[in-house]
Length: 434
Image 1 (cartoon, rainbow, N blue to C red):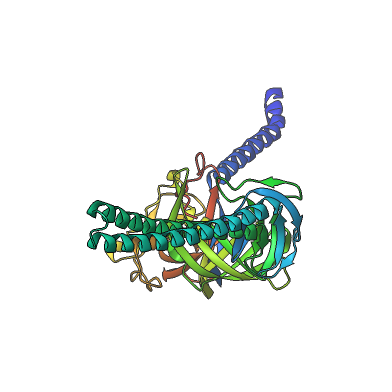
Image 2 (tube, rainbow, N blue to C red):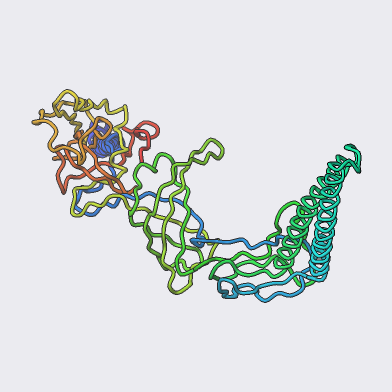
């Protein structure tokens, strides 16, 4: 009787223990199922603007930049221009000490006078020798002189004529030396070859410049800073998207909040290779009416080569996403088979994949003609099921990509990543394309 009574008294405790064990089992099963169910990061497909751009860096410069040098060596005597000085064509901007050159001109003029005097003397001597030769010939004909003496007189006359020609050449040579000396004297006065602004001065008064090997640079003059250009280095993978007259914009570090506008003048054919990287020079014309931009500034250039308004677009993360292998997804059939297929995966349980119904094929063609390289797959949550959809992509701006074909519509929920125990290791991704 006592044992039965103790057994009855202990029944409530046994029932409580059983309830606790059952609750713990349910909690463990619920937490395990929650851990195994994947969690998805999603983003919507929507209508918006996609602007395709090419970026590059470049350097600002004047349209025409002239380096003014010295043709002669000497000491800088005076300077009439400095940094930022506006100058006109033909304006005197510097002089070199001219005393040595003036002396050379005087010496050259004296040499000309001496050569002309020698020419005059040679002509007189030639005239006299010609008279004597004529007299000797007449006397020889009369038998008063021998024939040899007459021939000698003729030879002397011919030599005198040759001396005249030599003296004439000496006069020409002396005049050429005079012209050279006068030209060198003129080079001591350095004038601006164009209208513009002095952006660089490389000498000071008293400094000696040597022009024996090459002309030393004294000034650098920019023709007109109200019209400038940007020389950019564009990668060979992007150069095919550029064309003349294409609009471009850029920023400079001096005015970070301001964007300047320009237009592509030309894309030059010559390539530049630096560390096995091939680039091409694209030249952009820029108006600079306020003279804010200065030569040498670094420009961060953006070329806009395509723009789509109110177009269906998806985040690039949705194009990069691939379901993890642990979910065993069935990939859609390639568009080359002229059919669109999608694999469906229950989003709640992570169970075995089941094929979705086949659609009527790719809808629409990519602008400018579709190509296999523009066929991609995105994964969409439809009624809680992860479904693969083939799409044809268009242009991209780096964050969003235009969709021009496929069974995707605005409002579809796109999967960009997966979390949870079903995603063993790192979630699967396709190679980064953007």
